[in-house]
Image 1 (cartoon, one colour):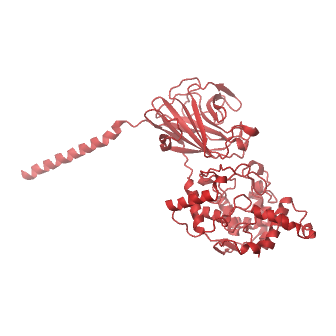
Image 2: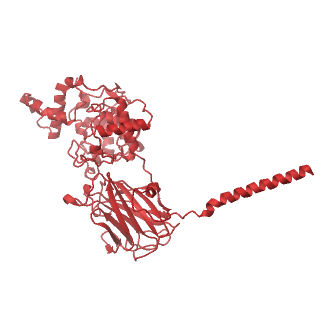
Image 3: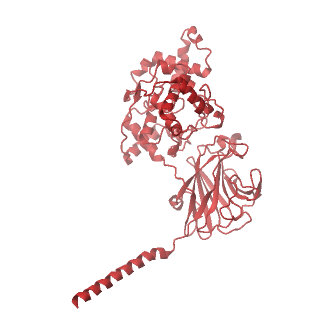
Length: 535
């Protein structure tokens, strides 16, 4: 039998070319009408069938178990109707990933015709099980436009979609070689410092950092120019963002990915490179240690600090400051609309003293673009109302409106800070920096930019900032490598900045005072009781 463990690894594709030259010509005439990409896959499968037995003897052993039976029988007509209703917009009528929405999302929708699926419980190169497909349809894929359909589609209908999606397989692989074995993922070990340290060693030894970067932010030297099996750009996963892990962020999910690989992408199975399961668990533990959950909120709380606010974005005071992740979305209201932003969140911290307030903005970016090579420059903007507001009134969140202007502070690594007021898209007026100061850096796949200004109003574009009072604030972000500039950006809605009032010393004295009063009252009461008993 054919083994597909290395079906999509490049070393096997190279071998396919030489094997093809030795085959009879009429063997290839039968599949000449296929698209080039399908020919390529067909050749790899064919060559794999011929040489698979040679590799099978030396392949590392992975614990497997029989695939579970599919609980719902196929009703292809029902599946077709469900697919037409829910799936064609992205995946297309023929399952080629070319629906009308395909050009407006990143990453592009899956092309079902080649039967290549990323998230599976089967060995590298193998087809997914029906349960794998059902789980993806049900749970969705974080970090993509694929939603969790369990919220909208009944369970039985999701099983019919599984059956129908398999009919798009143009090579008939689901019929000829359906998955019979799936990888067993045992209970995960306890995450200990020793296990994480072992995983860190493997991360370095196996050169995971070449794609994912030293800090796991997807900024490795091999990350630029990566493409998937269809020739579309693809970026290494940012390991610090657990909410974007395609196959889940549990320890067992990460281990499974290292064991099975992601078919159709540069991410291989690590069974060959790391044969021991306990070592793959260690690598998974290290990756898990790099990640954190999304910490969203409505208010950016600025803490009071005595003395100067640090200019170093990595200073202890900044590291200890409370942070909030503010979600971002593509700007799809004003032309040109932007449906495929890279950034989905920006992290902010804030500190203030008796003279000024400073806001630290952080975001991960695997590419550091300063405008070279014809690509736009990376950029960030902070937006405040340009004047005091009445009640809950706020300017329009996209660059203000005719009645209410916004104060824009923009920074990029090429030109530094620029400032403007805006009364709507395309209605910006340059403004002197005034008291606004900015400094930024890029390190290990992450930007950190500090923007600061006096608390008091110092120029026409300012609004005074007072402790204890809410100030509307919004954010905008551009990724130059993704072609983002102008209105092609990620942006947030309005949130609030709140300088928290400094805690007065009396707050700490009151508990002691009350304690002394209580103690004094008890002493007085005891003395009075003693007098009565002796009288």
